[in-house]
Length: 220
Image 1 (cartoon, rainbow, N blue to C red):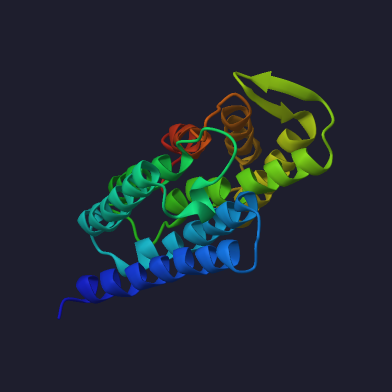
Image 2: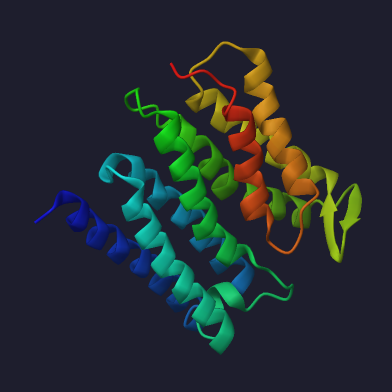
């Protein structure tokens, strides 16, 4: 059997297990949907880190993310998966997530066609979204200083600072450069994208802003 196909079923089972764990936490442990949603948000980002390692072509990523996009669309329409859908605000973040993973993987694939294992082109946009975004939300809720509104959503300077610091740490650990410009420009662009986007669409704008900067970063 094709290795890509085996990896497809393996990763799909892990994603389904992640969703199942979130449902158990929500339904039986009575964990608030805001937290189970963040649990899935972070877990999904970490699982996608296997994509460049396990899939040799972007077609497989399109298929797996496309199937989960359909699943999430149906869950929104018919009200199941409350562990990620039962939040008070209107959000399209769950739908933006698989779409932007496809976009980021395609960018990584073509950016590194003639180079080997430059996974950071995929890892930095996705990990920044997966880790910095929920940290910003948690700090903003815990320390609601410097409030400002984007549409109907309220954000905080504290949340933006927390986002920037996590994004900077991701870049510091993964970006193979001593170029201070890129090291700070990438998290700065992502921080502004997160701060000025609402309705969960920061799941889209954060990686896209990073992709835009990384487009000008030379392959190493």
